[in-house]
Length: 207
Image (cartoon, rainbow, N blue to C red; front, side, top):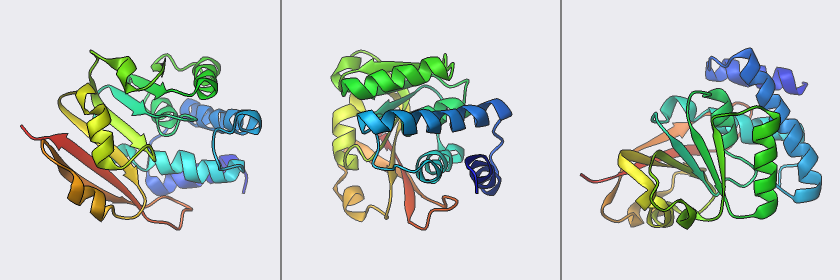
């Protein structure tokens, strides 16, 4: 199955209304990721078809459950999950936060080549964003949830959500989350073509 058909089949299974332009950008992003990955080691996933499943569809499966508003992808790496979210939801301001210079160079090139005016790339750690607030903070594989909340929680706008993409149900992480943080929901996700557990954890600060 070619990349276009693989993406289309996944989108159909997820029942996501993605525009033709967004679909084309998602595929262009995979091609850029494959090209730059040969030199910059952006992701351990090497095959474009696997990138469609493990990066694009894995991210897009979260969309129905993401709160609205401004979003910061903390430790964005090669742009997962921030870039697919920004492509699929072009009206949402997305900030990609990454400390690795080579990955930052890639992210900036992606924003230019794919014409993503809603994307901002910030080079540095979360401390670089002091004084700013976001409605949603998201990460995939950055750190365990308690550490993520401790490290980035000060960037969350009142009423905002910390969102963590996980594999197996993270029993220990949830048990070790401390006040003022509390889990609002843990959503099991079904990712087309991926025979592995996926969960989306949404947490918030107690009022």
